[in-house]
Length: 270
Image (cartoon, rainbow, N blue to C red; front, top):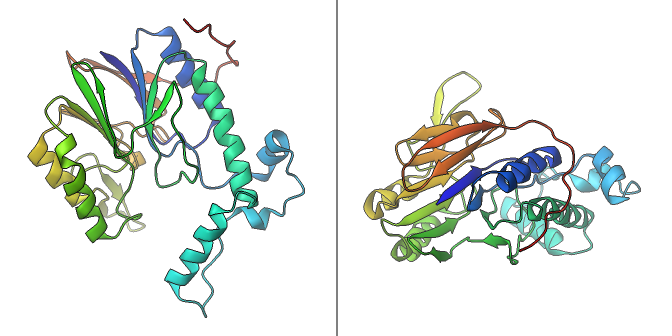
């Protein structure tokens, strides 16, 4: 089975066009997207062009600073309530953007298995070709896919540990594990403002992977650590602008450069 993998495209329409064309035209069985499909904000110019929402105040479309006189947890809950409101301007825009990206991905005519990431605020519900595998196991014959979207900045450590315990029974040596976050110490290196190295992966995830030993572990999140190490692949697209082609049986992989391309004609379904 051959897969085209990416992560962290962050809503760039032309890059999704490139991904869908490569997936459609290549000898791929499936596509896999490991999160941050969209961004959690949309530029005013894009709003005017795509959504006809130019009358919305741009201040309504960006996260607010936490006021000094409010508890941080109360503020977060307040923001979450706003995001659940279907009439909240940002959510209206992001849902339209999700619809746009869905249409592009469907042109590939092949199943795309995905998980959202920490920048994805819309639901990404499954349909016949786009399948959300967060906390799910999907059997594909010899292989199975298991997904997990949350990072350590989205979950309390205790909840993260409970999640790992709850999903560990889904994972075996035929599993292609798709998480947004890397495991700690594997393709998770970044640098701080002083140039010191930081590891942004999850220790709980690393422990579970070490115990369950999935066939492959695919992820993104840390843009600077794109690449492959053994059976682990960081497919973060944002900086290196490459997709990853992988034959799950032989392990042969290829980095495929993305270039802006003209919009594709819709493919015929078979």
